[in-house]
View (cartoon, helix red, strand yellow):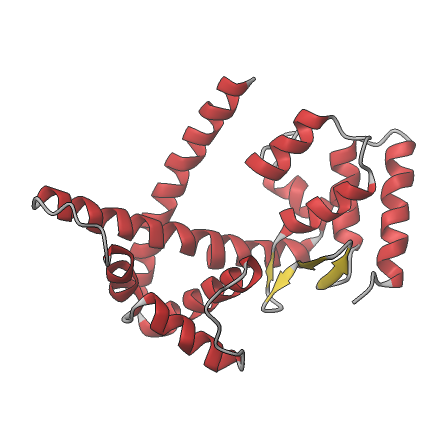
Length: 227
C-alpha cells in the first residue's frame, strides 16, 4: 500500500517546518499528530504503526518520518531517539500529548501497557523462574520460557502462538516476524486481562513497572557513559 495523499502533505509539512527553523524533534511530533495511515509499504519495507488498530508504535513512525529529513538530524540525536528512546528535548507528559494529539497519545498508552509492559512482565517472570532453579541447583535453562508463559497465561508459548493465529485467521508458520510478535504480545495482554482477576492483573502490572523503572535508570546511565 502506497503513502496516503494526506500523509504526503504531512511529510511536506515536516520538511517545511524544519527548513523554517523548527527543531526537528518538535516538527517530527507535529507530523506524527497529522499522520493518518495505520500501515504502509515504503522502500521495500512494510511499516505497521497501529497494532490491532489500537496500539500506536510511535517510534516506528518516527523512524519512517526521519528518513524524509535525512541529513537534517544530528547523527547522535537520531541514534539516541531510535535506538535508546532518548529524546533531544525533554518534554512533560502533557507537552508530548499535546504535540502528538490526544488520540495518538491514548493509542501510545495502549502500546506502552499492552506491548512494552507485557514484554517486561514475561522477562521478569522468566528471570524469577530461572533464579529459583539456580537457587535449587538446577542450571538447565530449557523450558524456562515456557514455564513463564504457563504461569502468566496458562499455556506454553507455541500453543499460545497457534491459538493467536487461529483467532486471527493467520496461517501456521514456523517463523514469526517483528510486527506479528508485537500483535501477538498485545493479544496476550488482552487474554491476561480476561483470564486473571483484578488483583492479579494489578500485581503483575506493579511487578513489570518496577522492572521498567530499573531498566530506564540503567539505560540512562549506560547512554551517558557512551557520550
